[in-house]
Image (cartoon, rainbow, N blue to C red; front, side):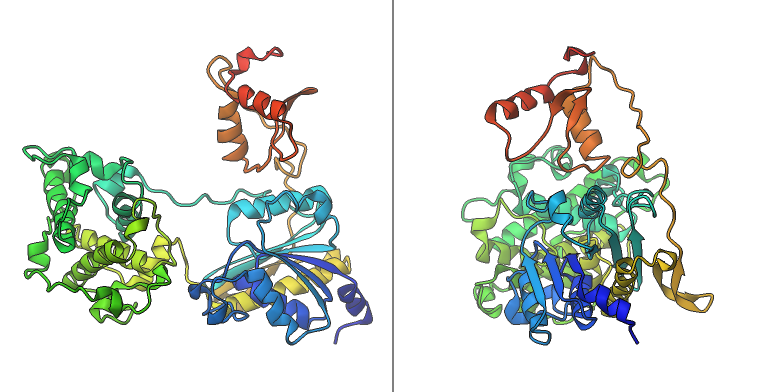
Length: 506
């Protein structure tokens, strides 16, 4: 039973939720059922079909609508007497400044990206508002409490950077399926459907075409009146056949590696398919381009099936055909989207064909989509458990129950017979560049380095600062903001191009 003190703390609290996705939907529901009366939600996203399996406040009729607004309406149906204020906006918008954050008793994060988490952490520190941070990855999850000067802030400990792969591995010597996915998504998809004027590593390989009358640009351009399937087979033969043969010509590369095998369309699909002029109709309405499907055209149903080389080849050609028949106007401006069914099908098929060439195990569309979108598929139960733990810690914060704050980790397998592992929060890191006053040292060549290098590579990329102000003593060298006068904007832009030695204080 909740004590009178708990009930009073909950009912009188003004709470800010950031994120209305997998954690956010569960969190809003749990806050409402726990007696919270004044809840504000910020989320910039709209509802996607792929959200519906775990974000239970949303239905198919809500696809395309604001997550924050629909979540509010859904909860008000069973808790009509509470106040929920939605903001369909980016938490980085200038409106959500320090003064805005000071209005709240506690901030609860349900975000899915590092940059936004850093931003909210710094606003909470500046506003001196407690933050309850959270995250889930499959069966794993965590909830942490951050109070200025009392516990470590979100950035006191370094966070792992997103995984990247060497370009030479992606283009020449893949050894894992993820290498094939990156190649299919960032190189082949981008080359065929993105900015066709931009060179990438497919061009480098193509331009090695000794004895070929076609230059690298012509290979990827569809010729006038060229049949779509002929074009698709030509692309197939080039990237999976000819390019592999060219790679094999460098014997040194394969001395200590398994040699790939070239794959040509005539080997994977001996017979040219019958023209399917009705392909578009087989997919139903094309009002929503993201619903067009090569699998549907080919009568393939389960995304969990691992396709054969022939099936992957069929999906590759059918997906390419559908891009040109249903979305021709978009070609040249498309980028990969994990919620675009046709794009996922094309990338899965292309990655599997390349994997087959290099002797790498093939994967299902379901698995490939997770890899391509950097996704560990969400588990609804984990989100619900984490949401409950957030509310428990929020209540402790509102009661100022500092002795009982806990960082709790949700585990996939029991450790010491526990699936939930609570530990006491750590003290602030005295060397943290965000919440401490410890100076950072940086050595630069003042005659070569520009202020732009410092702002872009250090302040923004390394330190993750969104709207930095750069000062030397009382001299203001750079700042950003919507309220700046034109002459100041021009002055700061000019400063960015100056080397340090040109400033008068050097």
